[in-house]
Image (cartoon, rainbow, N blue to C red; front, side, top):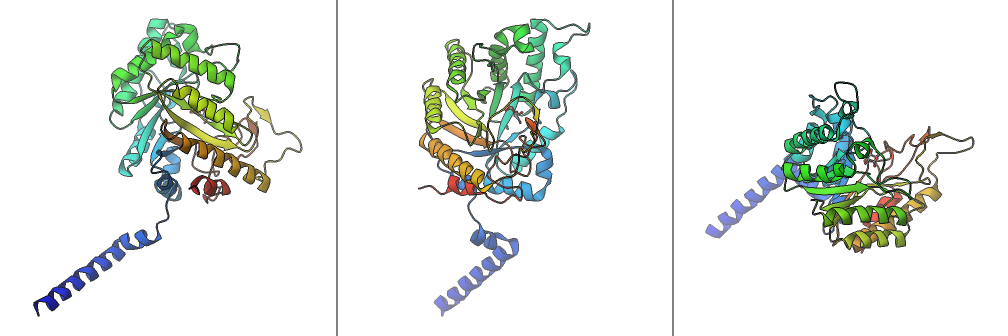
Length: 368
Ligand code: GLA
């Protein structure tokens, strides 16, 4: 009798649980939930994505982010120009919104970027007299900037791209002849890392650059890092931007790069991944007559093969790679649309313009 009534109580308990689960959506979510990109890589590294505040306002893009990614980078919102447009004024809204989206959805946050030669506000380099500022003034301004931005997001942003793209494009030169370099020499790099480390001693600090798989560029980035490490500058990691294409890098170039930087004993992340369907170019130009921007089956196949090779390598080097971030969410919008070829669409990501997984997506997740 006692046992029977116990069973009845138990049945009732499970029935209530079942109904509650259905009502709250918990039960249906549990049975229909397909793994997202981040789930396939749970034993490897976080999978991140660079976003704009606009994308987060679109529920379908926000849902796609939450399903597939567990790390986020503000695409532009934390860059010097957008966040610190005037000397005494910071514009926090966009960055704050991205940070609060990440926090409420349990995503890690990578900060990007504290010191770069592009998207820098013009006030930075000019004094009240209208002339170029001295090294002392420029470094003081850099310090104020870094203290304010890193300080605001301390404990929320776990990693920062501190210096971005300091190496010249010309393989016969070393550091880029930017205003930073012209005014401060190499010291701007050292100081940027020191200021960032002082502002948040727990943040992982990155030197970030592109074309690091090309041997001549790789060598120069390596030399810079080696020098900084020898001087005990607090640089903790290297970011390989990974703005790649179906034409490069090769598997050999990629593994040589990862091994070379790993030999420095520092951490490494893939920070801005996309695989363009066109060859790499930097100079702006117009679309040539007869040049098409249709995403063909052949391009989709080549891209799927390239993504497969890339992620095979990433998994192989999971002990040194601590994160992989895509630069934009889907082919609906990518910085490579119109860049550097005006009027040309690109298709460099794993999700198509309808936010559906592409062939390349399946090559990335179907591994043993
Ligand atoms: C560089 C920068 C990024 C971004 C891309 C283009 O890689 O590091 O912030 O501007 O160019 O979107």
